[in-house]
Image 1 (tube, rainbow, N blue to C red):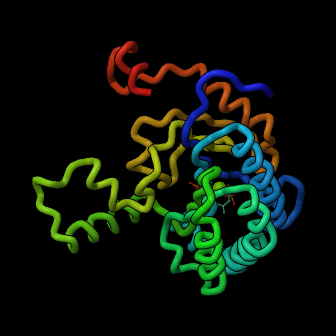
Image 2 (spheres, rainbow, N blue to C red):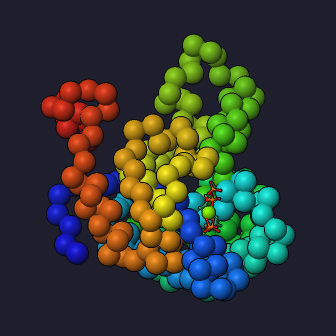
Image 3 (cartoon, protein in one colour):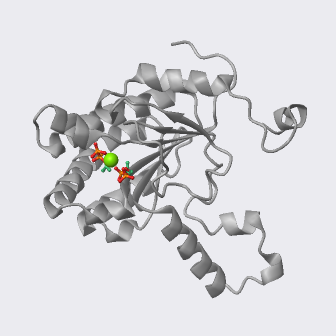
Length: 240
Ligand code: IPE
Ligand code: IPE
Ligand code: MG
């Protein structure tokens, strides 16, 4: 699909529906996660092609730790596989990689691989690819507050810009568009602070069925939206 007009700077995706995709086919949930991971690869490529600045993918929430142990450990193995086998290619294509969330809670080898990919992609200047892992918006805000208290910021000096610099997403713009697959219409603790003025695209498509065409469709729908940020249209247009 040809995209003309304004391209969102930052798109964030809640990649949901892997388990249901598998269950509908009588397969174990992990099969849905595997197919989902293949889609993720396709969507990252589409994001590079579309000229986005940043793509944030919600891959594992802080609440997802409460899933059955075997599902969690298989998800970690899948992540390890992708970090070892797919990321070299992404680094070659210029992506700058980072994570948000309590990644130190991930298995040590996965944590090490994440830091390694981050380090090796640091000097690139292509798509900024952000993986939300062991991530929760409330948790991120609380950790930011702890850091602020520890750094002795004076109450009067604390404004929104300062606060944002303590969030995991420091340096990233707020997501212009948040996509959620699988038919659920909720935020599930994703980017609570950052989504204040995001546009939302909800689709019933389960993540393993979410194609690049639908990704471009979501971008196209975003282009039709009128963002006002609480202002009247003429002023808001000047802000974007
Ligand atoms: C999203 O798919 C992937 C993760 C949360 C890790 P789900 O596993 O939540 O799939 P459903 O919602 O059960 O279908
Ligand atoms: C949100 O999906 C987290 C990810 C996609 C990684 P969940 O499946 O965990 O969210 P709920 O439980 O439906 O709210
Ligand atoms: Mg789900």
